[in-house]
Image 1 (cartoon, rainbow, N blue to C red):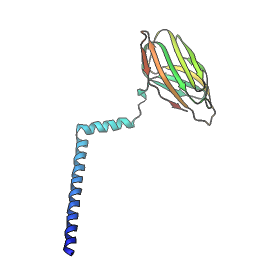
Image 2: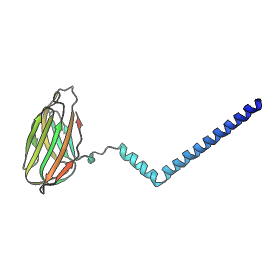
Image 3: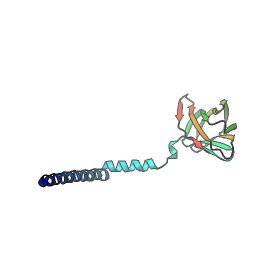
Image 4: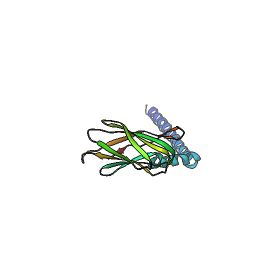
Length: 175
């Protein structure tokens, strides 16, 4: 009976050694494939790009100070005749009122100002080229000092002088 257990134990050790050696060989070959080839360079580049924040991928950004929300663009817009956007927020925390456009020869109108949702349209009397980094609108606000506000900028688009509409990307702001 003793011999049977020795043979079983020897067989078990040999099969485990084969499994471990095959696993180590597979791990080394996968590592070599990823790190030395073009695939590895692509994977490394994708990881580096994913961990960095890219503000330039957003077309319209918001910034705040003590009493004003400022919207600005990061991309150049040409022959703009109309620019529209909507703001969504919690009306129990945030109150929006006076809005002012900083662009030449333009008029701002608030189409709908329901509690927590406001639509704004900037209309230009002649086509305007807006350079990147321009402040588009300043909106005055009030909120309690100890509250955190989430403001979503949605449905941002502009229409050019040939009635083509362009959807712009935007990003929320927390302040």
